[in-house]
Length: 246
Image 1 (cartoon, rainbow, N blue to C red):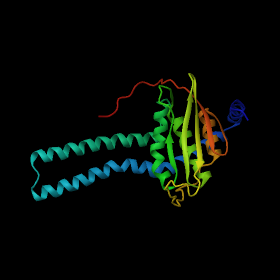
Image 2 (image 1 turned 60 degrees about the horizontal axis):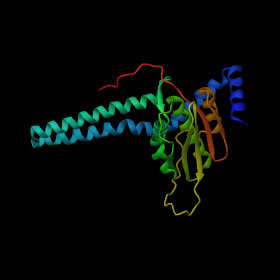
Image 3 (image 1 turned 45 degrees about the vertical axis):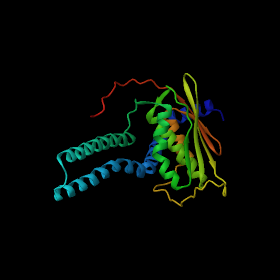
Image 4 (image 1 turned 90 degrees about the vertical axis):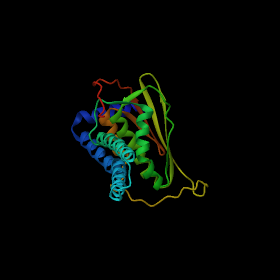
């Protein structure tokens, strides 16, 4: 079935009732639940560093050992960590409550997903590689996050064995064709990567979830046994620039 045929069928389903939207909401929830451990880690890592530094500083003060310069240095470090913690918390919040009009460069958006999932995939003996070319091409951040995260999870869940997942893209003026490829690693390949039997904290993400998200975002896609290909339109930012907190 061609991309155009699938898109036409998806539009017809969307016009027929509210079921596709319900499916998309369920898919978003499932993906978010699967991402929750990584999001939690990103949120607390800087806070843990602040707490540890505060304990060390408190112990040194009790001993009466730090100089004024040392105190100022420690406070400045804690201040920088606090700012980093605020920025990270805002990024995590954007996964939970995203801005529909926000754009992102294609490679940067893919990097967001790859960086978030890499550690958990490593535990499963899976590798992630972003080979999307760097360019000025911008897409919807929320659509890209939904589709890339869901595609990576669904391919890895379906493979159920250590695999190499690679993201590539071909970019034209009006759209990008993004490919997510999953190649199961053969046993005894000398890679030195061992899989750990990890049960997902929530249900597996499947092809139906990916389709529901693509339908909701208006993105055409198709799947073969080992890859998902999606056609993502260019998006031009329409919302005003926002000033990041200092």
